[in-house]
Image 1 (cartoon, rainbow, N blue to C red):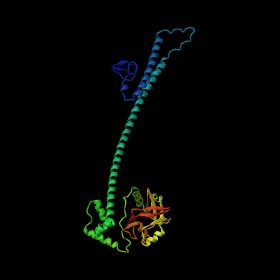
Image 2 (tube, rainbow, N blue to C red; image 1 turned 120 degrees about the horizontal axis):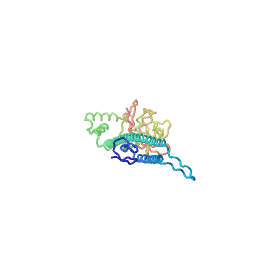
Image 3 (cartoon, rainbow, N blue to C red; image 1 turned 90 degrees about the horizontal axis):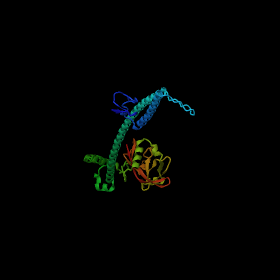
Image 4 (spheres, rainbow, N blue to C red; image 1 turned 135 degrees about the horizontal axis):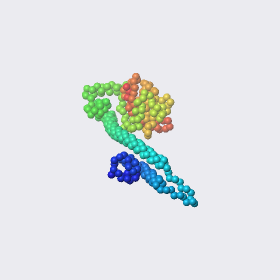
Length: 347
């Protein structure tokens, strides 16, 4: 037995509709929103009760005589005609059809949102994988930076005057030290070391302008300095990102005169529209970099050499790379003094 949702009539499930009210059988088996269905069923039940009441009144009218109204009262209106009942039945049938259509649309919309949720879930998992990959990359970069700082410290220790005096002529060249530190292998062979020592001795001869001085590196490279090096070495000219926070400067004339006499104790720079250098502020530090518009020829090499350790310089060089920028301090308005030499590598 099955109970009708509208008229509560119990019947056997032999047909597709309730034998009493013609309500569709199986309507409750379709998945839908319970609140919406309850409102529709309550409304349909109310309409059906009204229909039954009108039908019963119509039966009473046809089976009994119509009493005459009292003389003092106006005639009562007649009950609705069968045409009105048919219209209500058609309306109920139309609403039932619309309800089925609405339910089908609801199911399709729910499926669409379920697919959207699945897609968003996959995107979230992909983002998690990307974040994990970036974290792994950041750890690798931090490890490389730590190794780099260790290499720099070893270079500074091996290039210090005290270490040179203790090791004498058997001190290792800088390049083999870097290679050994990066690959965890021993330095160059004795034959190669002798050739490198001979080359350094020939470079250190008096009057040779290519004498290589050890890099005066005192602190590890900071993030601001690394960003400056990347911007400076990436382009053939000076990028706008550097130019907007920079001042064109040249060495002060008094400092230049002292430099010609061999005095490198106080190297100062002043603003100059056609200067050979740029003073760039990055965070709390002020750096000095060569102006790429001015080629480093033999006339200005001594000036550049006072602020930088120039590795492999030749007047007909192809290009140079900024290894470390020089550090300066602002001592007065539009005046800076060299605090730490930088490193340039020529090719």
